[in-house]
Length: 117
Image (cartoon, rainbow, N blue to C red):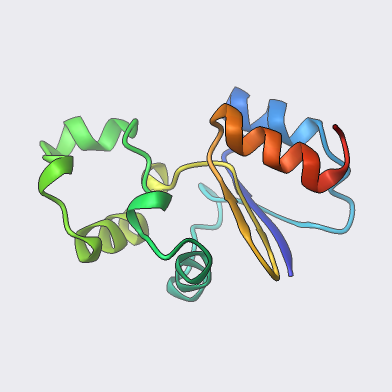
């Protein structure tokens, strides 16, 4: 399995994806094709946490008046399934691991995985 979940309107996602040869990867634009519960479960198996998949920068947090510190794993799961902006992105899923988000350490791990560095 080789899937990438990203947002086409996100400059950071586009910049990260452009670094790699993704010809044999399934690309999923999450606004057009939101993640399914099965896909979220697969991500959870590799990260052991819904919170690790949750973007604390989502504009929906403020709009909904959410207190992120008070959320449970069940809440994170429901929110991730409810709105695409709650997913930290991009998410690269392989048979063995998941690369979640755009922080520097994660991008470096991706670059090593793809043999770019």
